[in-house]
Image (tube, rainbow, N blue to C red; front, side):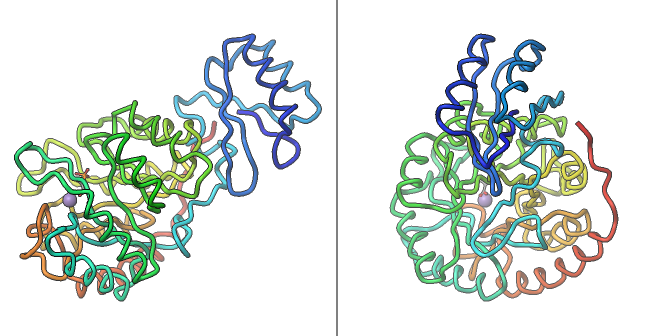
Length: 351
Ligand code: PEP
Ligand code: MN
């Protein structure tokens, strides 16, 4: 990772750096952070001669070598002061909630629009709504491009940023053209490195936030951080980590709740952690407890399924969606608990 003396390198300086790196089989990705631009190196960056030549350039302040398998996401990275912004909110600064339906029903757009206004009223900072859905059965509802127009209308009416999941390159193109604010990568694609690279590159240099769900079969915490690294290495540091429960499930829950990894993640990375309690426990009645636990574990927020009338919804909404009234109460309670847990110090991992 190369840190320039000035805010960024000139194109002539970048070309010189690229020329040196290429001699050692390395290449560089430009990553625009909030305060400065950093230059991430792909390849084996341990060659002493190469490091010496780069460090010798008078416009280079530092050459950082982080040994962890993820470098950009690491707490010691030069990106550690990067702020992930979502509308008016700075994720990682206070407790923020993304809420809305699992699935937008294109046949009943009024529910989504009502839900969008209701979650705004309840205190959510962004609205979620599934346009395309990853379904276990190919015979289940797969989503519909028409739902995107409903999502955009909700943004127009409420003024809040909107979030939806992409599963393939075509979805990515469509949402980038539409200027969707948050791109979700679902649990099933959390280890789809091709998609992670495409999303990183496709959103590079934009303010688009990428919310990465934890893979339901992921084991070590570092596997999650490496998946996030693909997005940052593609050129987009606006990454949010979203634990959402893993398999095998805890008997009675949809998954094994994993909000407890929040402090582990926050000790290793600067990226905000936004927990999804809905897919974790899988039943509306349990969602408040998982949400409060996430706040106690120091998560930076929630991504929670909410519907004005869950029983009339599709996808997960009949089972999992909480009501806007529960959401409003939960946001108040979680903020209070989060404020208390923020008073305890975390051990931050060194390079
Ligand atoms: C969702 O958010 O509706 C969803 C499908 O999430 P996950 O990928 O966590 O199952
Ligand atoms: Mn869902």
